[in-house]
Amino acid sequence: MTRKADRSAPRSTGPVSDRRAQLVAVVVPEPQDAVALVEREGAGARIAVLCLRAGAKDGRAALERALGAAEARGCQLHGGISVLDAGDATAALRKVLRSLAPERLSTLDPDPVHTGLDEVSGALSYGVPAAHAEAAAVALDAARAQQAETGRPLHVECLRAERAAGAGVTPRHPAPVNWLSAGFDGRLTAFWPTAAGIVRWYEEVPGGDWHGPELVEGPTLAPGLLVIRDPHGLPHLLALRRTARDDGGVDVDVVHAAQYRTGRPLTPWLLLGGPNTAAWQKGREVGFPAAAFDAAGELCVFVRNFGHSVSHRRRTADGTWTPWQHLSGLRVADELVAVTGAHGGVELFALARDTAAVLRWYPGPDGAWTEDRTLPFAARPGSLAPAAEPGALLFRDARTGRACHWRPGTPAPAPLAEPDPGTGPLATAPGIQLGVWSYSLLLGRGTDGGPALGVHPTGRPDTGTWWQETRTPTPGDPSPGVPAAAVGRSGRLSVAARLPGGRLLMADRDEHAEYTEHGAAITLGAWRVVGG
Image 1: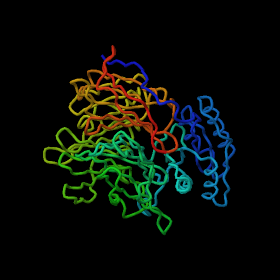
Image 2: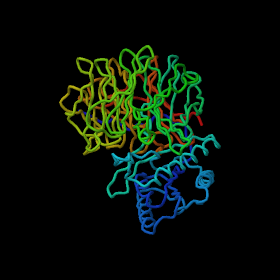
Image 3: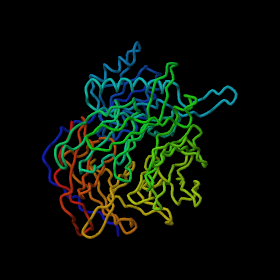
Image 4: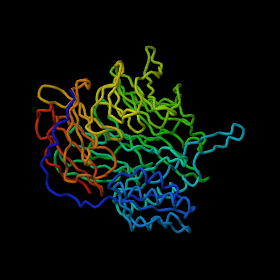
């Protein structure tokens, strides 16, 4: 039976931050465009709406209603609706951001997806006004300048928000899931995307002081990140680079870098381009990359292409890259997850474009890709993540929002029985020893905003998952993203969560094992704040 463990609190070092609600700056062309962005903010957020134009009366009224509803669910409002100086929007926004010092900035999609193509002229049409991309570009420029000036990491979310009633809001660039890693020497490194690029924190010595956050040198990156590990456990980073063109356009390319030694510079960012870079208007729509290593050390990178199908490149073990190749099958949304299968090859999961179905591609007997459209579940957007077990997937049920685990060859998903249905993906850490048994660790966000930890026997989520919420010194902190965990070569388990101002909240496992009347549990030591 799946049971929930006691919500016992690990030792605390005492108060570590003030509890002032974090400020999110919502930057849009006009008030109507802020409605969907405001509606997605949860309790505890402090919202400031910044518009490039005053907009129409109906749009302002709609935003006022959305702000009233946000206040009713526990958000705080920072002033009224602000309209920036139209003379120089970037300079005006920089001035306001300097005054507000927000923790987060929420804006629209700088690289919208086309909804139509004129076969004769080649002209593209879009489901959103051109002002969406223009405002997002202004917001990104101002946010980078703000972070460069202050040195304080600024988290940016670029959201696709259709004006049509009932249209959903989805992130253009996903936040990383498994963003904490352990090096050969046992030292931990954490990575996170910000307005100015990737920042990292790392341990000076195992279990000791931390350095960071420091900005990783590299190209102008979009505010998203994928962190994966090679067969040796070393972290590799994939992102999108946005480069302004002389003709007023923008090139968007996939880039890759790796960290081979903790605390040392990353490898130079390698430009992987994209499957449609021959025409920048098409190339800028490239989806965010998914990637995984096979058992032989070959790296396979997947993206959603201009036609909403999948393209991929492979780096062989000798470092040679294949060209971008098309993967036939149904059209997909901007949600791909690559995993290393139990057979040692790479497999791909993707959310279908027009339904909640999940698609799978795997290498067939002859090495050719085989598409599987018969997966026995449907998933909520934004919830796909790799499981700790080879070839397995984590997701949230499309109807209930409950977290589930599915492995190829099983007739149905295994529910993970979270105490309360959450949102977004779950992070994982494999190989957790409890007594003589091996467990997989799951991480989500608890009801008070702190990490929620679940464990189930390795490879057997069907036997039950035991959950516990860990009370941190900063309960209810609405920092974006899920917590992360890493297991070092010595077996040390560490759990991390983000805090405002470029800080991390860290805890190491304190006991080898603990069994309560409810089942297996992980005991964490004192939480401590590092970095910042």
